[in-house]
Length: 486
Image (cartoon, rainbow, N blue to C red; front, side, top):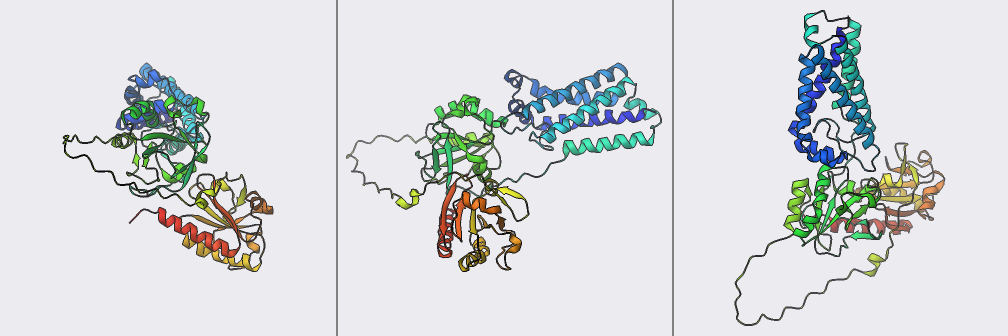
């Protein structure tokens, strides 16, 4: 009658076997998880990460073949293991930064979310049922010899099996992550970081060093932590470049608490994580740029490639024989560096204000959410005068002219009240009561402002249809200059 309780045994065994095999295939990911989850460092450096998958495999086999006291011990150990996983995940959700647990190697979701907590809670509940099965002398070998039990019990347990399988191996909603087409020789887009030590903005390209390694890391990433732990040694061994860790201020927390301490030296904050989302897909990623923001090599992704990129900054010059002949000729005068026009840098970039619009899908969006993947050009109108109509009718053309940007019509009039031809499909952001226009100081109609992907204003506002047309042309020209050569 109770033979349906064999399902939790089989299910726990399947989870442990899948997890063990996945961890064996990615041993470094398991050790990274110990670091990312902030388990005691002595434990992370011990044989525990290497032994954990073998322990899971052993428990999985015992749940399938064990009976009596052997099965009871195996189920109790499985339950304790699942409870331990649950507590570790619950603790990790309180960290400032996102954490990758690699609980199932490269299978399923790797990031720690509330969904991960729910998944582990379901596993604990399944472990409790497995212990109950062992106490009631239900085992896989015995069940194979007896009647299968009631249909209802099997159906309930089958549903539980499906739920756990979905939670363990299923993926949640896809997270939009931007990939970069940057390659050696291309120019880094105009972005602004914040210096952790001084709080001052650092614009790129405006780095003071001939070689700068922008090291995009997360404190919740085990391989990132390993790179940061040897960062002082890497800096000493390769002094040819300044290595600057870059962390998103959304998840980094208080810099005074960063560990290892090397992460604080020359560190940069990425406002709202916008730059990281735009430039990189995985951490750690290293980008080597010169003082003009030109990439000196392709971006390096992953611990090994990041180390190799840093090592490449210290080229070893060949030893040449010293020939004492005529003195060296006078060096040619250096070509003076062309100073940028004053107008180019006279624009004071300020933080994008906290304001909300209703996007084309009817959902509220903050301005920072609008620019989470790329910069955005907002063309604002608050009336239907002739110049406002002209600007609204041009939005679709400007979208085609600036495919790299989000181009939106910002209207304090409800989209459904706008005449046909003045409602660019999917590109109208409704500004209730004109609050966003006020926050952005968009007083005229039409007017336009460029919001940077780094959380700062990037240009404008400008007023009038002609001024906006020129504004768009200037932006297109700058984007063309920054595009990598074909």
